Length: 495
Image 1 (tube, rainbow, N blue to C red):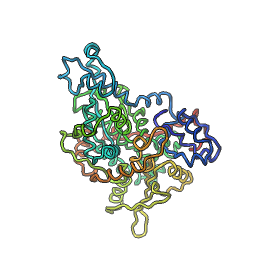
Image 2: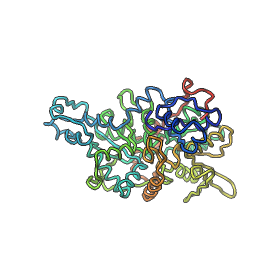
Image 3: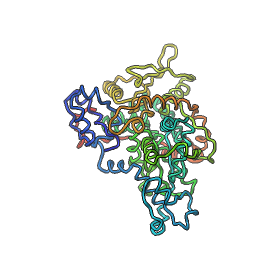
Image 4: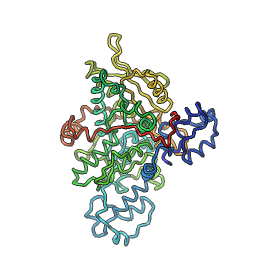
């Protein structure tokens, strides 16, 4: 695998117990370890393990998955753009088409006018839609030297110059995911006395954490994972189900690209449950990291000053001066904060305006507590990064997890620190200065609560036929299951 390029995430603990890891490594990872030496001391000094590094290990990926992830790249988008070539005489009649000169300039490919006319097949045209994660926008803001909104407009202009017809922000989808997670937590809390798997509830927006849970932890954790889909996959449903219908398009005629800060999002996009076998289409066709998009801009020597500033599109309504906003929290959509405040009000009638985090092991292992008259009512935790997740898992095996909810993310620092925008594929350390700048940029956005978003309420009714409908359950939720691969992961291996 080339998506992450790190050593297998089980290596640190396995070396502590049994010496060198015998788990199958990718060539890049093996070479990296050889260069750094085999000793655990050297590993700890010069190599930072990330749970998101699971993509660098072939041990838990089937050949089919490896192939699918390898196709999540700029070349895949290029092929779709090239298939959108149109007959010269019909160019003005097809919305969003791009002439061969633009395509040649965008991707440094040579396309002759004659081939456009001779090989054009209008039936293969696709409408390109790009959705941008809000955690990616601060990356471009820092790189462009602009505020987040201005950077979003420049990025939108760049994507549309390539031939992308619609550009959305996924904050709307995150709002759905937060609301559904809130509702599920309340349901789990109320059945905790007769359902041993109800609590703790683990958040489900991080695909690295989900992969680790399904392939390694199994039944210890999977029944506890919130079933609400991640913002990425809810955005996929919004685009392929709601938006395509509004545009009178069949879902397979829409090619959906998602820009994310994390390599692991590529793995999430190819999950079997997010594929429509009847229409042969995925909710998200291709995930590109922020770094891949910026690399393309650098390759094309794009000047930010010369880019048009284009307002982002809206899934519902006409494009306009839409104000970008964020949800509460440290930069990863704030599932913990939203669920904590909602539960305090719904379960105990308490209004919580400010949340105080208590550092336990470090800034990436924090605890939040709700108390009344000396009684602890709620105890939540935010656990980020491989080492802290290992601590959580060990405590859970011993039955010593006091929390009702744990927000789990594989990257230290959360989603803003995703390796798709803060580090290289060669295993370089993350750029801490960049992360700090991105955190400041992200924090500058105004906070809006999903509960009061009128677009979400409209879509619940018009798209999903109500908040508690079968349609809402089908499109906004999924299931997680044990997928331990005994032939690639020996039973004695500990992650």
